[in-house]
Length: 485
Image (cartoon, rainbow, N blue to C red; front, side, top):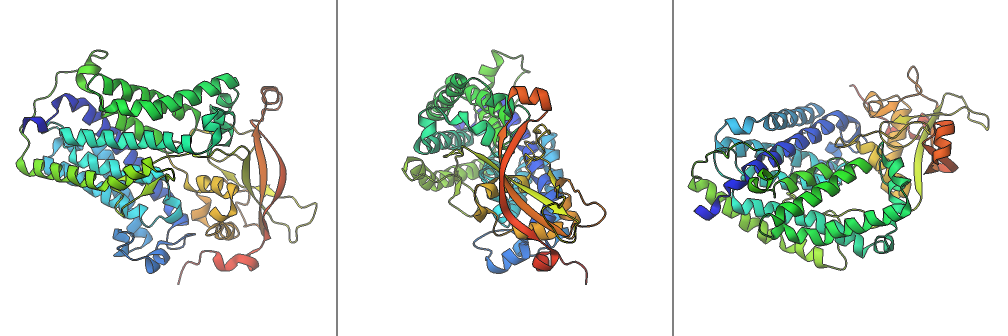
C-alpha cells in the first residue's frame, strides 16, 4: 500500500522517538529516586494499601500481581536503562518487531507506575507520556518508512494538547480573556525557574502580548497542523517556539519538551532541508503485512476512543487532564484554566526545644525546587519532576490537597526518615531528629529590582499563619514509617 508509507518523515520519526525516549528515561529515573518515601512499602501513600482496596481492573498495573520496594526499583531502573538505550539508537539496530516490543515494555512499566502512583502521579504529562509512547511503538524503526496514519494520530494528539490548553484558558479565568493573567502567573506558577523573576518584571504591555500570542498559537495554529506542507511544519515551528518560551519561564516537568517532540513529528524532511543541510534519505524496505494490519487496527482504535476526548473539547464544562480509559490511550489535556493572584508557600520547620515557646528557635527545611529561602535563586529543574515540591504548591492553595499525606510527611521528619530526607535539599537536624515539627503558610512575592540589588533577596514573604500546629512524635508517631521485624 503506497499510501501507507510517508518516507519524507524519516527525520521527524527519529527526532520524535529519540526525544521521547529521553523523557521516558527521565520519568523512570524520577520514579526510582523518589518512590520509597511517596508510595513505597513505608511511604506516605503505600502501594500495598492502594492495591488492597482498588482492583486490577480499575488500575491495571503489574504491581497488583506483586509489590515490593525491590520490585518497584527493578521496574523503574529497567525502564530507565531501556529508554536510554532507545534514545541512543538501539531500536534502529534490531528488527521491527523487537523495536515495537521495546516501546511496549516502556509503556507497560510506566503505566504500572502511574496507575498505582495515586495523587503523586495525578498530572497530565503522565498520561501524555503514555499516549505518546503507544504511538511511538507503531511508528516503526529504520527498517520501514513511517506510517502515514500514525503521523496523523500524532498530530491529533498534539492538536488536543494545544487546543485543549487554549480552550480551558478561554473558558476559564477572565484574566485570559482580558490578557492580564501573566501579571500574576510568572510569580504564582507552581515552580518558578531561574528566569521567572525576570519574566515577571517585564513591562505589562509585553505580558499582554504574551497572552495574546499564546491564544493564537493554542486556538488557531493547531488547525494548521492538518494543512499540506509546508503549512503543517510552520504550525509545528510556532508551537516549538512557544514551548521553548515556556521552558525558559518556568518548570513544568517534561510537558513542554514532550510537546516539542510531538511538534517535531509534523515537520517533513523536505521542508527542514530548505533550512538545514540534511543527509540523504535512507532506503526503506516494504512494510510487512502484519505491521500494516496492526497500524490500521491502532488507527481505528484511537479514532473510536477519541469520541469522548473530542466531545470534551467542545463541551462548555471541559475537564482538564482527563483520562477516559484505564490504559491512558486517548486523553484530554489542558492546564491553568484559572490563575492564582497571590502566592502562598508552606514553610516546614522544626525545633529541638523540649517545649516550644515565643522565643523558640525554629529551623526551616529546604526543598530542591519550591521557593523557601529568600536569597536562593529559583533553580532549573525541568524536565525532571520533583513530586513532593509540586504537591506542596497544591497544598498551599488548599489543605484538602495535602490531607491524605501531609501529616504523615511531618511524622517522617520527626524520625529523620532517610527516604524522606533524600527528597529535601536541607535537613537542619542531621544528627538528631527534631522534637517538634510545624508548618506555616506565608505569602510570597517577588522582590523588586532595588531590593534584589541591595539584599540579594529574590523573594519577600509576610503574614505567616499556622498550617500545621507544632506536633511531636507522641502526637503523630503512628504515622511514622516502621521498619524491621
